[in-house]
Length: 447
Ligand code: GLU
Ligand code: MG
Image 1 (tube, rainbow, N blue to C red):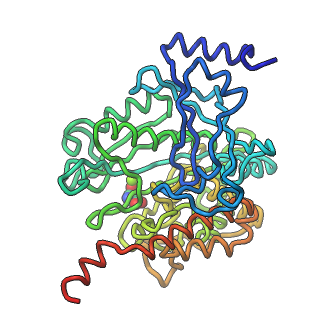
Image 2 (image 1 turned 60 degrees about the horizontal axis):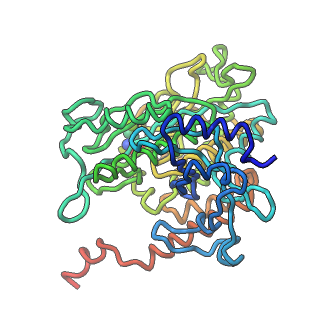
C-alpha cells in the first residue's frame, strides 16, 4: 500500500486541515542541538512520509558559522544524504504561527536504512535501550536559564537592565511581560512547562519543564529552546542559551533532575538507607562523579562554557556532590519518595539536551553496573579545592578527558565519539586562529 492511501496519514492530514494547518515544519536536532527543518505543505506530507526528506548529512558537521567541518561521512564521502521522515505522532500546532505545525523528524542513512551516529535522538535512544536491558526507566526534569537581549546601537544589550530581580515574576524585572507571553505559548505548544521566573542576572529568566520519560523530556527541551529563540526573534529580540554571554553577569545553567523507575517505583528512594537514598542512587551519583571530566565535553560543549565555571558562581567548579547544597556539582534535592532524584548542576544551557541527558544517564548506568560508591557528601559551602578535584577548565581538556574515558565512549558508541571530537576540535582550532576583541583592547594601545 502506498502511504498516500495510508489511513493513519490520511487521518493526520484531515485533522491538520480541520485545524487550519497547511504547513508542517519537520524539525530535528543537529549535533549542537539547534533545530534543522523543512516546511512541508500538508498536501505533500504523505509524499514526505513515503520517501523521507533529503538533507545533506553534513548538516551535522556544519559549524554555527555555516562552514562544513571535515567529519567522517560528510565531505570525505562526497556529501551524501540523510533521509528525514516526519513522525506524525509528534505533530503540534505552533501557537504563534497560524497555519503551521511542528513535527519531529526521524533520521536514517538512506544507503543502509540505519540510524546515523551523529543523530542525537538516536544516541539517547541507544543509552535508554541499555537502561531498559537492566529494567531501568530514567526520568528527567530539565531546568534552563537564558538571557533575553534587545538591539542596541552597538549590537545586543540585556533586556530590562536592573539588578536584584532574582526570584521575581511580573513587571518589576520584566516590563513588557515577556515571561508570561512565553510561558503561555509554550503551554499551548504542549511542552509541559510548569513555571518560570526572573533569574539572578538582569535580563535572565528560568523556565522549568515537568519531569518525564527521558526521551520525551529531551524532545520537549529541544523544542523549548527552539521556541523561546523563535518567539524572541518574532519580537526583534535575541534569546540566548549560551553559557556565559556577558563578562559582568553569571552564566546560564541547564540543571538536570534525574531519577530511575522500575516496576512503576522510584528506584532512587529507600527510606531505610543512609540519606534515604537507595544503593542504585548512590551508585548512579558515584558514576556521574567518576565520569564528570568526560561528561563536561557534552554538558559544557563550547569554548565559552568554561567561563561559567568557578568558585561562588552557583555553577560548579569542583567534582563534588551534596545534600541540598547548591554549591556542589551534583545536588540531592530534599524530596524523597516519588521525588527522590539528583540534580546535576554541571550542564550549561548551551548543551544539546539529547547529549547532556544521554551522557548523564550513561555515566549513572556505568556507576550502577560497577556498584561504585561516592565519597561522603560535601558539608557546608563548597568550592574548596582541598576537598575535591577541579573540573576540566577548557573545552580542549574536556574533549581529551572524553576521548580518554573508554567506558563512557564505548557506551555512547565510537561513531558518535569520533564525529563529535572532530567537530568540536575544529571549533577550538578556529578559535585559536581568531583575533579576539580582548586582544585588541589589551595590547593595541601600549604595544
Ligand atoms: N546561573 C547558575 C548556573 O549557571 C545557577 C543559578 C541557580 O541556582 O539557579 O548554573
Ligand atoms: Mg536557576
